[in-house]
Amino acid sequence: AKALGTQCVVFNCGEGLDYQAMGMIFSGLCQCGAWGCFDEFNRINLEVLSVVSAQLKTIQNALVGDLKRFQFEGREIALVNTCGFFITMNPGYAGRVELPDNLKAMFRPVTMIVPNLGQICEIMLYSEGFETAR
Image (tube, rainbow, N blue to C red):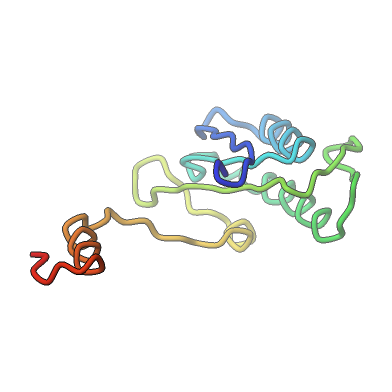
């Protein structure tokens, strides 16, 4: 986001978030064209996630339709098409829920691992012409 000059707002998710709060956050992101990163998204209650799925689908349909304004949560709001929604999850921890399939289908999965810094340094040294990088 920083390299593209786009505002990215990070939200720490938990059991306290309800569908109305999520709707207000989505509405704000849509109207200003910012990105939202929802950290620990799978800590939100399952009941809330099912409503969030419908909210995101409404926004997605408006983006696909290249609309400038659309109906969201009973109000007509502006839509800046640079808005984006990203989630992070740590599955397997206590208090985490499995995302509903319709919500899971809206996001592309990316797996993160701890980088092997030794191997990265070795490759960088080889690429600069060192013959014995180890």
